[in-house]
Image 1: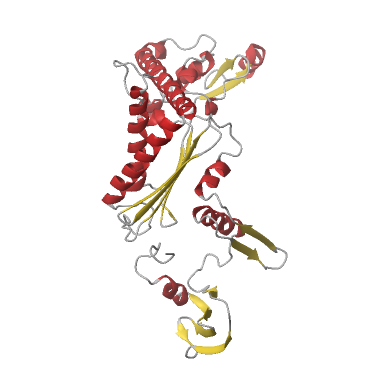
Image 2: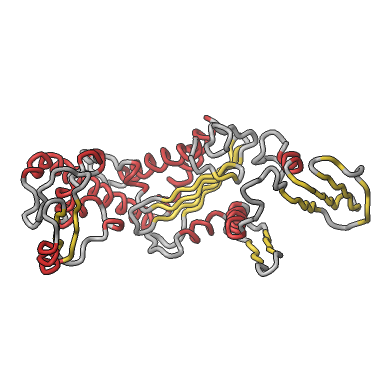
Length: 385
């Protein structure tokens, strides 16, 4: 069953490695015998020969990248390779993968094996976060020869982390399987909320962004004939992958929600909070847009502006407190240096929702003073400094 699907499309991967290496040696344990062949820059040094007997199976490949081709570097990054090996172990549950660095002064070794597969992957990604429900939701199904695995868990953050894979290849640009997952997630959660009377008939549905806020998810499909967009295998293009992922995931998720009402309610409450914040942020943005024209002529009262209107030479100094502001105002060049004192510890905007950001007076003062606008209205050419 391990040979039914592959990340490769044309069967030339090993041949390309051979062609791009100064030397390549292959040792194969198969059918009770050990077979061996060596190459130099893609040319076999001799025919395949039997060099012994064995009671195991497996392949050992040793190659040295050609520095005449890889002119920037031929030095391997252990941390990068180790991260990829760990990812493969998560995606192939129960398989132990070992990576060992035998270079002088760098000797290190890691073994990875995860019986929980992508469920363990989600737990690993959420290890430093506060989760909304203890157990990740895990779903697996097969249809028309395509196997779909999904694991997801919500945390208390405001962003989503969704990683999709096709035949163990990281499709970080997404694709049809990821689109099917997102469509199914939004539809099933809204349908469940209405069936359970959580939403009133007049209430709008949660948006895709609402139901994905704080979501960590892994989507892994095994497809016998994957079609990728472009040459880099970063985006899956099979149309059937979307419908099958949607169908398998939706059915299993709906069952999970009805069987686990406590977890379901926590997920929906998380989405409702996101929706309220989204609507509040929308109102705050509209208010910011309406005021923007007025605020240019009505700059923050605590701003000590400069006389120059040329943003090419004008400078803005942001200082903490009125006392620092007073000293800065005395020592500045009024021609091109402006001073904006802020009160107290400013809001950490990286961890705050947009509605809270835009309701903060100190942040609003900075937005107004800079003059560029924010979000969709951001225009660097309008910068005042």
